[in-house]
View 1 (cartoon, rainbow, N blue to C red):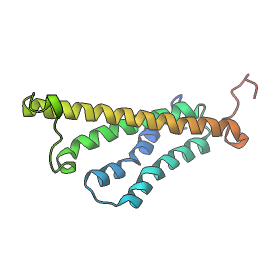
View 2 (cartoon, rainbow, N blue to C red):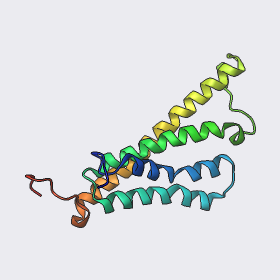
View 3 (cartoon, rainbow, N blue to C red):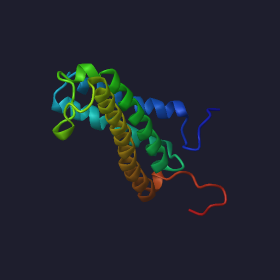
View 4 (tube, rainbow, N blue to C red):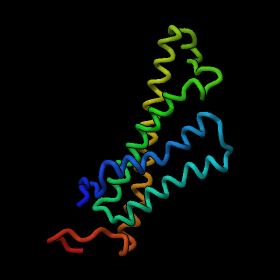
Length: 154
């Protein structure tokens, strides 16, 4: 029997679904694709997440999709850090009153730290938005509802 978490899926399945978003990050950072392919690489993984979660009829679609989004955020953050130098012809710098206020190494560390946090936040927000859609669909479509928990009324 396959072991699943309280999310209705194994941690490996959650990580696997989150990994579906990584090709877009790489393609974007390296400038490998145009807007149409980028759009497909953006939305197709999210639709797969939603489809798999609803098909599996997990106990809480919102929570499961939030977990996938969180894992995606971590992968997004790490991938952006790995491709940082390739993604920017000119390294990002602080501007305005802060221009030149920090040593170049400190400035890069600050920019990377904020970029990392932004990626984590993005992943969580994607998880929240897709999770909300999943939650609504799981409640609105009887065939997508999780099996009733013993002792709980439908």
